[in-house]
Length: 274
Image (cartoon, rainbow, N blue to C red; front, side, top):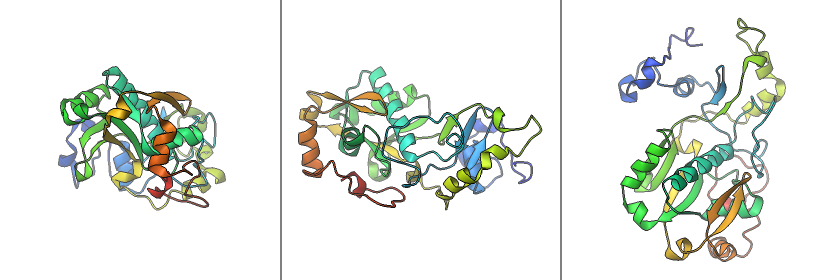
């Protein structure tokens, strides 16, 4: 692929500042290369990587995420809700490691109560931490360090405290069984009609930073942070506010358990968390 398009990707250029590569045929990772050339799926020896995740009713049901074990699931597009679920797990792990209390709030808590899952049409994870931690800039530095450089953590769009994943959506898998020996470059098993139909749901490709979702960080009110309860998302336990029903009714009304987005939905929606 790289040879035919006169592009290259090497371990050396992954360490080059991205700004210095602007306008060149060198890319610091496969995902940037793929996005530049309108390529969705990139297969390597130990993972399948995507330049974008997908959010639509055909692929992304509101239910706990389970990592696929076989085709076509392994080779099909990754739902943005699955990416957000991974971000939630990574970020709360880092908060716990640093001894920083957190609470799941807003749409993330709503998904936990309604289906023990991430709402599949939402574009963010909502987490509250103490107000003192929010204003202390060393908090963001410490979180970036714990997350191994895989996330940006700090002030983002409109000066909002956020975390963005810096790696593309991917699934770790031995891809050798999908090819007929080392000289097979086609990997026909990865291009079945069913998989192709799923991929069509991702088009057109976008490189908008919102397309992968993000974590919104809020300064937690004392009433949230003074006490807590537990909820489950994707079969993992997380900490949230004590008065769950009261807060959800306050945020979303008496009928909060009824999804407001129905039918053949496509893409992210702020209304979908109401």
